[in-house]
Picture (cartoon, rainbow, N blue to C red):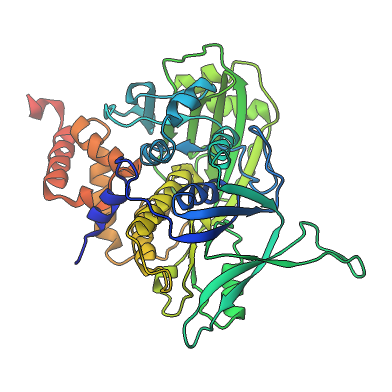
Amino acid sequence: MYESAARVFARLSTDEPLTRTRTLMDKAVVLGGSLAGLLAARVLSDHAESVVVIERDSLPPAAAARPGTPHDGQLHTLMHGGRMQLQRLFPGFEEEARAGGAIVSSPYTIRAYADGVPKVSDGSMGLISSSRPFLEALVRRRTLALPNVKVLTCRAIGLKFQGDAVSGGAVSGVRCGPVTRPGPGTGGEEWVEEADFVVDAMGRASKLGDWLEKAGWERPAMRRMAIDIDYATGYFRRTTSDPELAAAIAYRVPTATPPRVASGAITAIEGDRWLITLANYGKQPPIRDVDEFRKLCGELPPVYREAVEGEQLGDILTYHQADSRRRDYHLLKRFPARLISVGDAVASFNPIYGQGMSSAALHASALSHHLRSQPDLRRPARAFFADQRVVVDAAWQLSTAADLARPDVHGPYPRGYRLTKWCAEQIAEASITDREVAVRFNSVTYMRSHPSSLAAPGTLLRALRLNRSSRKPRRERN
């Protein structure tokens, strides 16, 4: 039976408890121990006798940076949609995060500014504000506390297949090797970790496409959108343990001459710290000097200037992302059974929009729904990829539409882009001052609702009326 994208998204973003779980397999293997892999392992723990997470980094017991996540010092925000899924997968998650020092914000402790103008609060969407290492450590601790989940510190170097791409087959194991590649004459044994189900969570640099092509299967095409954006993040001492303002975002409408700061985000995190990220584009040099960082924060709303007056904690951290990218596994006609891909291995977006962690959480929800539907594991997981596509399309539409508005980004433009862009601009403008529109707009940007919900005629007509009224001279309105 046909199910619209909006209904699929609503089904995946539900906060209903996980029920009807049933053991379907002996062993599942997850490739990658970052957030997407850990959430997949948590879901698989409901359906497998044992779950093995293969990770080349030695996972720290507490919150700490690690080589596999070079961007983990930058701002990471758990949107409302992702926040609900973590609470669903790990009951009591928010309370545990708060006890560890994270800030669980209400909508009234979040501020947004469009070209310096404060936006009205929606009164409904909140965030979990913390550093990425803190959040990942908490998810890791909860996942690895499950009795049937363990980690192997090694490299995944390929897959083992049962059957072939012509007659149809399935993944039956993962080829593994030591973390350090052995040199000539040094030995170093390889082995196969047998598996009844495999999840690729190897991130943007996933090798799954190479492995599939080498074995005679189809490689997914990769779509890219060049964004060439730089981030600079600073940490500063926060004097209040329970701030009245927990998070803020200030953005500027793209112009022909890129501003030094295109957007700035600030969040209160564990350890009584402010985390501030400034983003720029247009082939400008990264912001590395703390004096320039403080000066630029002074040009943003007052909370930024106040935050950088505190003690600086560590160096300014920079990060460059060249593109957004996605791999369309749902389009492949030949794909092995007992294999899926999740997280950044499928799609990664401009980080400034904060979609990454929440998308990974919704991928986990899609996996849970798929396995709870008791699928035939002898067949490719096409129902899962169809659901996942809805999540990817939603996040991709939001992030790429915003990036395409920049004068230095030149496509590819989706069909109907001009009309879609005009409608989105009307709704975004109305959301600055009107709470009803803001509720609907933020529900989409916080990954709680599908973007198609903004296409309702009533929403657009309300936005048009509000915008037309606000542009009239005051004497015409009297």
